[in-house]
Every structure is written in C-alpha cells, then in structure tokens.
Amino acid sequence: MAGDRTPTTLGWDDITAIADRIADEVRADKVPDVLVGVLRGGVVPAVLLAHALGVRTVRAVEVLHTTADCVDAVKSAAPQVANATSLGNLTGADVLLVDDIAGSGDTVARTVELVRTAGAARVRTAIFVVNAGNWRRPQEPGQALTYIGTVVDGWVVFPWEHP
Image 1 (tube, rainbow, N blue to C red):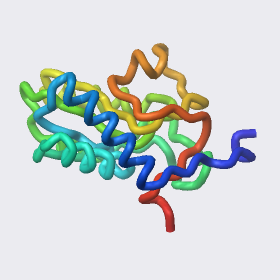
Image 2: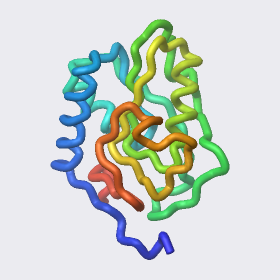
Image 3: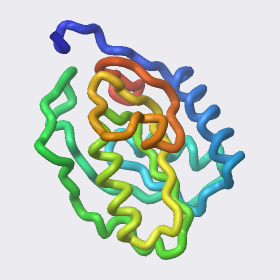
C-alpha cells in the first residue's frame, strides 16, 4: 500500500544540485524570458532557477491537484486553477514553467495550457522531481517534460516543507 512507504526526503543540498543541473541544461538551450512557478511548491525552485539563470521576471500561478500536504494525500478529480490572470501577458515570451514535483502530470499539463493561453511563444518545463509511481500521462515523463531533476517512486518531502 502506498501509505506504508517511507517518503523520500530531500535536503537543501539535493535541491541546489538539482537546480544547478537544470540551470545548465536550460542555459544550453537558451535562457528564457520569464519563469513561472506553480504555487506553492514550484515557487522556491522557480526563484532558485531565476537566480542561477539571471532571469529577473518570475511569475506565479496557483494550480492545485493535491488536496492536502500529508503523505499520499488525495488528489482532486482535475487540477484546480485559481486566478490564471496572475500570469499576465506572456505574448511572444519564451517561458520556463517550474514545479517542485510532477505526480500524475496533470498539473503541469494544465499549467502549460494556461501559459500558452497567456500568449507564450515557447513553453518549456522544469520539474525538480517526478514521482514515476503516480505518472499517468500518455507520454513518458522524459517525453512530456523538458527538464527533469530526478525521478522517484513515492511521496517526496522538500526542505521548505520541514516544520
């Protein structure tokens, strides 16, 4: 049973290493104009990448799929969007969408749609952790996501979630 598994706990050193690796990959492919962090968990990685890449324009959008913060929390039927207008006008922009984790892949897919609707010319994704055990998109994570920090099978606890 999923609830019996011990979650993967990542520390700041792990997150910094992932951010550095993703920043190198992004830089090799062209530094974006704008970074968009998915609230809540994707904002910290977005800021880390913004500093590493020298990008000053960082935006956030709230797209929730998990209903609580506990291990193996229930997900809503579909990702819920709160205030898509927080993205502003992204017409013609090269956007890097950043999130801490992709489980089913539904949140990132929905957020990519929002960013495209806001006018982005190019949308890439940077996901720090993929939970392969929950992935359910038609494409494998490596084909559906542009940059992946690491892949695990199970719940992840990030350093900003520690009490």
